[in-house]
Image (cartoon, rainbow, N blue to C red; front, side, top):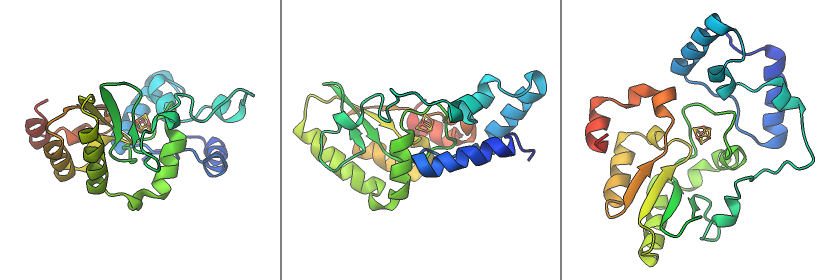
Length: 197
Ligand code: SF4
């Protein structure tokens, strides 16, 4: 597939991935084709392009007030040592069911945390995470909704998702996903039937 990122820009960005611990560039073949279609119509730098490829400004401009956790998720992790349960509101919480995404968005506000998790990914399996979550939920009846996030929850595969939905069937589940944009083939008949979407 034709290259859609300038070599120099890519190399500069890769250095930042190492030094700043941010997510590397990752783009599905499906989305790459969409970006190429966009480039053929309007050239480099359209909205599809900028969603997944860094700009020179992003790489070179740094201000004194930048912060890594700018939505303050780290302050809202209610269980010590558990970085996949985030609770900012009384009646719902975010469950980072996986740290893997189909593609990496340049605007991701979890880039630092996800790149950290990816290095220690195997420490917690999805099943173990669900056990920890269920224990917490049973002690906190005020939580009515669990938001599956990540990473992309739909990247965990049909069997894992079925297990998660079954285990957590007593709570409302919301799924945050970018799969419809990056990898729509996951919405096959089997998935749609199970998820009732
Ligand atoms: S899919 Fe979500 S978690 Fe993954 S990089 Fe994009 S915004 Fe971040």
